[in-house]
Image (cartoon, rainbow, N blue to C red; front, side, top):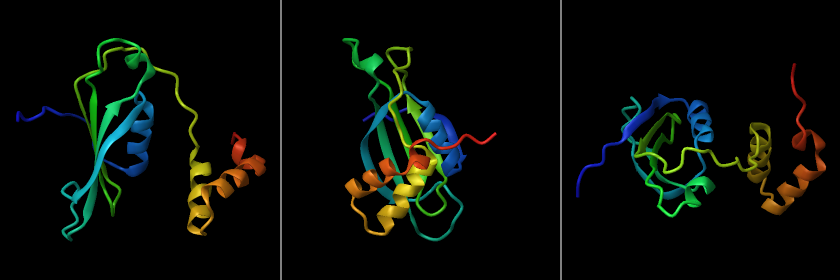
Length: 141
């Protein structure tokens, strides 16, 4: 099997910067996700890293007959959250597809806190709907 020529997009990025980079990309899905021994940070202790392979899920690329050959790879250290992001090939269609509605950082933090207390996802969603500050966060000026 030939070796793939991955292009480095971001190496040694912090978790927040890596997530921002992934959010700025076209829509994708995680095809495979494995845990491997970490080799991206300088921590000498034995620990794990998450290895994810991404595939294009963009509506603009999916509308064409030709399958999109874009692939992504993300390696994230589980202890330091250092990320390496790589891509392979390019998208078939250059046009970006409309972004899906996603939770902002404040909403994600609220969901994590509620999940840690043992609430079920439906209860968390209902709690977010009742709290107008989470649905419509105030813009700081």
